[in-house]
Length: 306
Image (cartoon, rainbow, N blue to C red; front, side, top):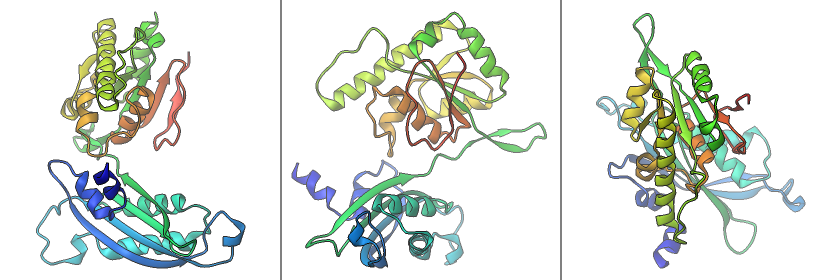
C-alpha cells in the first residue's frame, strides 16, 4: 500500500515508467510549468487569476529515420507548452479535468505522441496543491488494406456488440448478412453468458474469470454461424480485416497485454467493445440487443434496428 500511495503522488514520469510495457517507449517531459489562468467553478474564483502548475509526460513513437540532429524530426517541448497556452486562451473553463483533457488531446494530435500524462494543480486555493491527473492515449493506427486501384487504404471496421438475445435470435444470419453487405470489416463482440459466472471476491482473478467467460460465449456465437471465427490477437484481427472475414473477439490476451487497457470491469462487456472500437479506429460501434449505450465514446455508437 505504501508504494501505491507513493506512486500516486509521484511525478507523471515515474507513473509512466511504472506502467510501461515490456517494450517501453521514449518519453519527453515538462516539469513544474507555471501559468496564470482564470479557472474554477466557484463564484469567488471568477475574474481572479490563479497559478496552475503543469507536469506533463509524453510517450513518443521511435523516430522512423536517423534524427540527424534535426528538431523537425522530433516532438518538440514547445508542442507541450503551446498546447497549454492554446487551451488556456481558448475559453474560460470551470474544471481542471476539462483543461487536462483538452491539453492531452492537442498533444496527441502530434503524430509522434502515443500516450500522455497530464497533471494540473491549483497553487492558490489553499495551503496545499489541489489538482487532477489524467492519462490519454491515441487510438491505434488503422490497419492498411489494398484498394481497387492497388493503393493502400486505411481499414476502419464496424465493431458490433451482440447481446445474448441477439446471439440466440432466429434472425442472426440475417443480421450477419446485413453487416457483410455493408462492405466494411466486421468485428463481433459478446458479453458474459446468461448461465452466470463464478464469483471470487478478488478483483484480479475475477477479471480473468469474466474475460474467459466472455470467450466461452464467443464460441457459442461461433457455433451458430460458420462465418464467425473466434480470434484472440491483434495480428489475427488485422489479417481477418484484410481478407474480409467476420471475426468474434476473444478479449483476454489483448486486454491483459495492453499497456493502456480498459479501465472498466471485464463484466462491462459493452465498455470493452467500445474500447476495442477506439483502439481499432472503428467507423462505429453497433449495438444489437437491449444494452445500455456507453458514455464518453470517441467513435459513433448506433443501435441496430430490432
